Image (cartoon, rainbow, N blue to C red; front, side, top):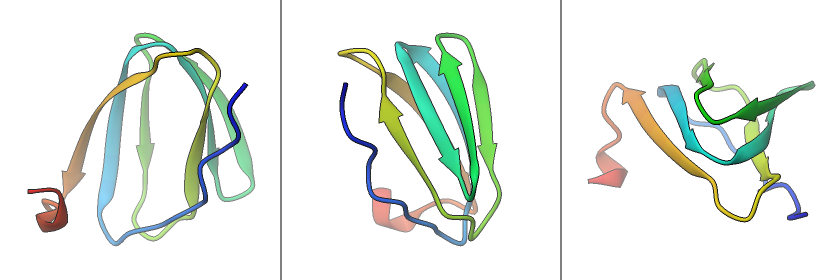
Length: 71
């Protein structure tokens, strides 16, 4: 199993769809197990990261406002 990514935060709200695979989501002091078909939301400025639980994980992310650094 992979190690969790380093925690990070950003001023953007984030919503993500788990298109494939399984992961553990960490938001502040909470943990969630997510599988294909699940959706999660991260409010702005909250520390968060993921840990993959399967070899391949595909997420479809949306950010508001748009993340100029991802263009």
